[in-house]
Length: 301
Length: 304
Image (cartoon, rainbow over all chains, first blue to last red; front, side, top):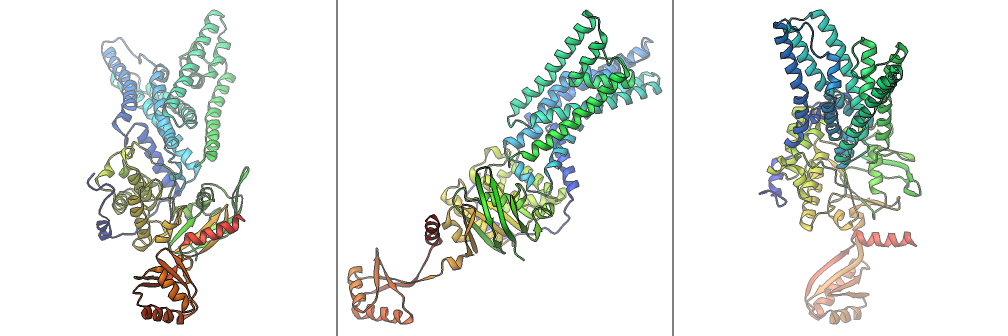
């Protein structure tokens, strides 16, 4: 505090001011800068140490089972017990969805609620980027963050399968499908969570709201599906119910598009249903993008 | 080319008119934008930056149209918002580097400029600590630094002395003045305190209720009035009588005697009277107005 408010102004004077005549980046490059800054922020990098705990923790939680499964695959194959991965790649996101939900619930408010709470938006909007650039950068950063979280374990699983000597061609196709699915999971989770977070300046509310929406919708949908599929023995209706929670929605697309095992009691009952699942998935992403741009067009600065 | 020029700029909110057909030209130097709270100062700045749209009319900043050339305009303008806008959990250095990049500076240049600028505004070791723990004075400095970090051609400072104690106020005002004299960056600074702006501004624009009250140089505002201020060793009452006896129009203002100035001969006459009566001259000078007086006059005239 030696220089606090009573700092010697004469010293400032002597250093002299230097202007800046160097390069100035374009709007696109600035948006890219905001994207990388937000992506780092999603993992707590460049923020206080306590901001890193949850994101890095969830990253580890998602990665550890993949490491274990990869080791199991190698050991199992050597013992002649296994000729395919224990868990299909496409099911990994569904199995680990609790960790995913916690991650987005913490990262999305970190990305947008803080700027609302501290009223920092004017600092951005008074600079050479537009409101829509801000929305795009934040959405893209969250999507990338979730994708990293999902893709790294998938790659670990894949490497395990290769090391175990499973059919390389088949494994490559399977993991590619799962990675495509991961892109959809990331886009849907990121869009919904950023949209929810953009309506509150309180990080706690954001976290609670996102966890509630994701966990509640999944538990209601999956238990309804169970009741309809097994008790009422109507798997077609159970399949359609999957439309109503983000995780089962994207899982439905995977089931239909790649013909993989459903992680829910029932997948889309027909090709038409599968197509509807895909359209709804893309629709959710498009609609949240539209809603976010509207939200930020109106936000007062 | 004027730094800022507005053309019949109007902003209406539901139920309130913030700006009413405002046409002003602002040139180089430090320009004070004065008005009571709610006079439309902040609204004007936000419109100039494109943060909010005008209802009608137009404006140009540094020759860039606010409606069509917002990006080019904002890359050459710095903005210090009135209210708290700093995240609490990052350090001043991190924030200012980040915002420099958001203004289009490459990373290495952003680091260098951020360090320089923070030093210029008077933040040293504390710039590595989280902003949440800063005093109001330090926060104001960070806000100023982020407005200057990209070396703009003009900065808009919205109430930079808000919340500061008298010493902090003086330092901030000195800093604002230096932005133009030492850094060569034109300044538009708002305040509801005229006395502050009088000290640091070259020009003053006074708005009230969203309309232009007056725009002119500080020198014009504080031009000599047609009075001489006189202070003497002798009793003011004695001197008053002596001066009146010599045929001068004199009024008394505390220890000061105010003599109506008829021409250069008034100086001679006063000198002679003082010498003849042995009043003991302490001070004889043309009396200057303060902007506040002009403002009061005009404000009351508008009110009527």
